[in-house]
Every structure is written in C-alpha cells, then in structure tokens.
Image (cartoon, rainbow, N blue to C red):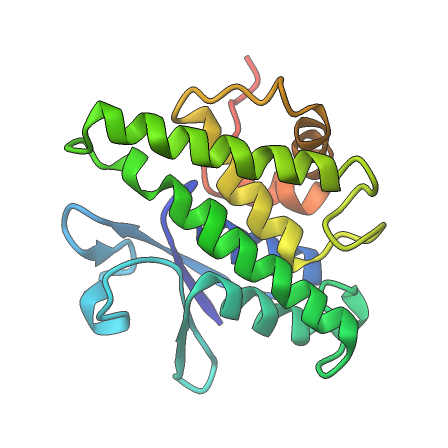
Length: 205
C-alpha cells in the first residue's frame, strides 16, 4: 500500500493508524505547489479532488477521505483494537466520533488556513472551535481516549487535527483534559515514528 501525504496534514491520521496496526506502507509526499509527488506521480491522476490523503491499495484501487482510510487500515489488523468489529454498537460509536472530528473539528479549522478569510470570520471560527474543545475536554475527563480506555482510529484523527492549534496559536490550557489527551497520544511510539517520518519532530542538538 502507498499513502500519499503532506507533513502535518490530515493524512497524518491514517499514517498513525497504519503504524499502530503494524502495517507496511510506502509514503509518497505531495508537493502542493507542483502537484507532483516525490515519487514523480501527477497527483491529480491519483486523487482528482486534489487533496491528501489518498491510499493506493496493492490491487491498484485508490481510497480517499480520512474517516474511510483509518477504518480500512484498522480493519486490516483487527487484533490491534483500532476499530471494533463492523456491525457492533461499538463500531457505530467509533463512527460517531469519526464524523464529529471530521465535520466539527477538521472542517472547523478550514477558514483559518485561508489567508483571505476576514479577521471577523476567523474570530467566529475560533469561538466555534472553543465550544467543540470544551465538549471534548468534558468527555475526556471521563476516559483517556474517545471511546474508552483503548486508543482507536478516532483518536489518531482527533490528535492530528487538534495538533493544528500549534499552527494557529490556539492555547489548549483552558482544556486540560484535551491537552492531556494530546500529550498522551504524542508519547505513543507509533505516533512518534509517524511524526519522525514526516519531519515533524525537532532533531536533538
């Protein structure tokens, strides 16, 4: 399998899940400026939607969209516990969280990435994110991960997008349980490996 990614983008979530699951994947970094990947591919032909992540399977099929990819990868290693079995209530709970992260947090950041977004709009966006962070903080006061005591694909996705607070100078101090979650996930060996592979860890002096 090959994962098309950009450092620190939402593609970090399936990257983390693949490493947590012990799956072998190749990485191909997208250069947004040129539309080409490090491997020399025209990314528009890989994913006509134009954004990462995209996952090329061994049979040549390409899957896209974070929530889909993290579930697919988790299902390749069911013993990893990254996703409950399909058809169970626990799986629907995982999907509930994946949908929340996708629509309320991931897309919630969207206007902050655009340089032409008016400052007044950015303030509204930040206020909306603050409400979502407060909700997450309340939920994470009850358990270490979104669905309970076990790290799942939903946690990889949440970690990836909440990490964007570092790019937009959003302080997580008002949300100690969410901050604790971020620290807890960041310390996981597979997450460290993914961050290292994407060049997101500062090199020791």
